Image 1: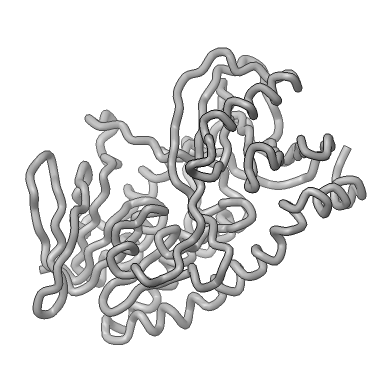
Image 2: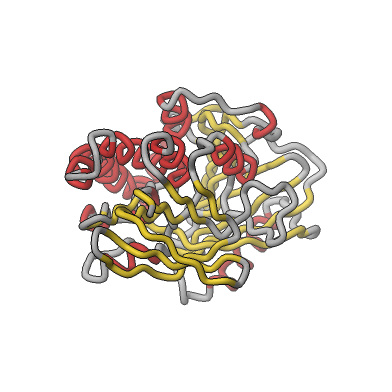
Length: 353
């Protein structure tokens, strides 16, 4: 009998397990193998691997320091903004940590207390209510196993099975498909590139240098010729001088984009949601690590006084996340409306040469 079963071991799930693992009996389930350096099933998280200032602030608040082997070259201090719709370009100073995302997730798992039971290479199936809590079923190496628990935490990302099971009547965030490809790149590029083009997407695309590679990604609306639009993006950037001939691999994932506060949902009864499963991700930039760390911290703090009433305490603490999402949604029109973005970029405000 566990106190808490956490489904998902990304930054939200791993951080929560780290914070509560010495107080509660915890089971952590994830489909990836984040302890074995040579996993049987290599599943990479489709992520640009940049730690934005908000994520850096949360890591500092948690009293953590990132090991240097997680960082990758180059470290980035500028964003090149390319507006293909308006044929404009600007450079803005920003501060990012360029990281290896898989190593980052492995590091967060490595600092979880040994008292936490971890089941990697495991697929969550479902749960059922039982007296005093829930019975969680999952598949490990082809075998179906079960665990009894008082509380379930959904830290299982944009297509959360936990959220779907408890929030069928809840407004869900808009979903985008992220396509990201890796290419060989022998010459250094010293900035992160953000690309806006309404022909491609009403969200944005990105180019991130990482060691000897270049990552090209785009957030695209599902069922709207996503692959075709991604190829159009590559063709347009090729005309600007980029070379995408030597492809190494392709990754994909869903991204949530909450554009209404009602889409931020933290759970009910003895089931809580953290990170992107709760709809906690920036609607303007799709940055999610800071929200994952913050929501898991708030939930851990809410559990410090016991399980009774923890969800109400969690909802109270998370009000500032809801306010932040509101502010990001108010900011979005200036970034994503072509005319407003044109005015902002033409002004040159806060740009650098």
